[in-house]
Structure formats: C-alpha cells, structure tokens
Image 1 (cartoon, rainbow, N blue to C red):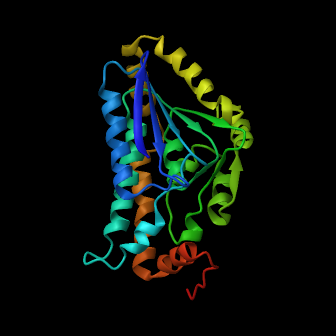
Image 2 (cartoon, one colour):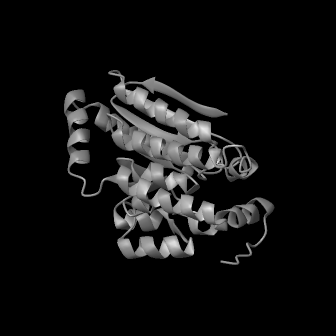
Length: 256
C-alpha cells in the first residue's frame, strides 16, 4: 500500500495503491507531488506513467479523514491540507519536466480528475468512468481539469448533476488517446511511453515547456480560485452535512 515507482528504459511508472478505492489522505497527495517532481528532474527519466492498483484510479480525497479531524484545535487542518495537497499534486503532474501518461482504470473522480486533466496523455480501460461528485460533497474544484477532458457545456452539466462520462465518450472528444481492456491498459501505456522515450530527451523536455507555455488557461490559478468556494462552503456549514451524509451512507438533509 502507498506510492511506489520503478524506472526502466527511461520510463518511470508511478503506482498509487490506497485500498479500497484509492481515496488519498492528505500526506499522500504531497507524497505524490514530491515523487512526480523528483522523477521529472531525474535525467534518466524520459516519460512518466501514472497508474493505480485496485478497483479504480482515484477516488479523490479521504473524506473520512477530513470529517474525523474537523473539530481539531486549528479548525480546518485536514481541509486545508487536502486543498493544498491536491493543488500540489495537480501542479506536479502539469509541471513534471517530462510527459506524464495517465493510465486510468475504473473510477476516476474528484482529485483523480485533477491528475488526469493535467496529464499530457490519457489512456483508459473500457470500464473507466470520469466525474466530479464535489457538489454532492459540499465542495467545488477540478472543473478546471474536467474542462480539459470534455466540452464546456458537458462539463457544466457534469458539475451540476455529478454525472460521469465513460472512457468511450472521452475518446470521442479526443481527450483519451486509447480505450483498451483493463488487462491491456499498462501495456498500452508502456507502448506509447516507449515511443516518447526513443525521442531526444532534450527536445521532449523542451516540448513539455513549450506546450505548457501556450496553454490558454493558467490551470494552477484557475484551480485555486475554485478552492476558495469550497472553503466558503465549509465556513457556512453546508459541506459538513454533505460529507457526514456520505460517511454515514445516507441522504443529505440541506437547510440552505
């Protein structure tokens, strides 16, 4: 369990494993960020594959950790930690000095969208689904990254309804490069990674900087803007009821 990596033939594979659903605690988001940045700086690495073990790619933040710590002396330690950790991990994917390929199987929700939306290439299994349940959890965020995966109006509908999109739909939009059976996912990602690893490392690193430099949206600033609304919702008390209902497996009862 945890975050591991291996490097072979210029390809670094980072694997996230936090059973049962890969909902990451605060410390793990920072650990993932550090791992990705270190691999990007490593001259032996030419491309990174980001993958996960278990039922799904990523289920976002560990809401149980957040609710357990909500009455600490500092008030919002876990919430602030999750916000900062997610921002750090998303930025680390985007700013990794080499291309990052996200290999997505099963569910990719919440924070998973932030990771995948900032990746350079996405390869998904046939059972992969993508979505933001944030509204149902009394939060906002990662619409910045979802908008990199689906068209604008679909993104808005997904945020409001918390509906998910399939890998096949994202492939039709052009944001997922390939859709393959789950058993073939890593092989497909490795094949694309091997093509990149054959190129000039200097040129590929320059290409990553170049492509980030021409992006029309500042993804870090845009995401931090979204997070401000999450903090407001927490101060208002709305988010606690939403997260309590999730932890207790019941319908939320909103008074405002």
